[in-house]
Image 1 (cartoon, helix red, strand yellow):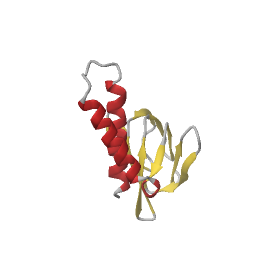
Image 2: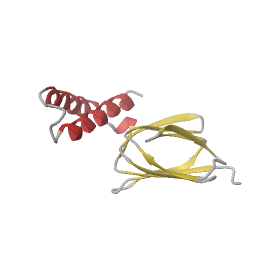
Image 3: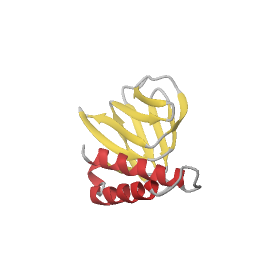
Length: 134
């Protein structure tokens, strides 16, 4: 077994992060899970939320969108729609997106075909705000 855990965060546009980490925490669709080196291998779906990892004793935070994660004893590969590091998030833009989504939802019946799409936009905006504050 290797002495390091490699993390790759990949979006359709770019490699958001690649490097050796001590641990990583990912928002899975079945709940948040943590990975240390030597972890049992598995494949899972990833939900909108906060991904964080520790490198050299320091935590780094990302707001991520849906996708998949592959875990092996030595590597974690996260393939997701979007990934924004906390210090790269435009908090004002996220706040405006949150307010727009809340306003739209307040005027819409849950049966409306757009309700779920706008609700997901609200969840993404709230996640981005929370991660930007870290």
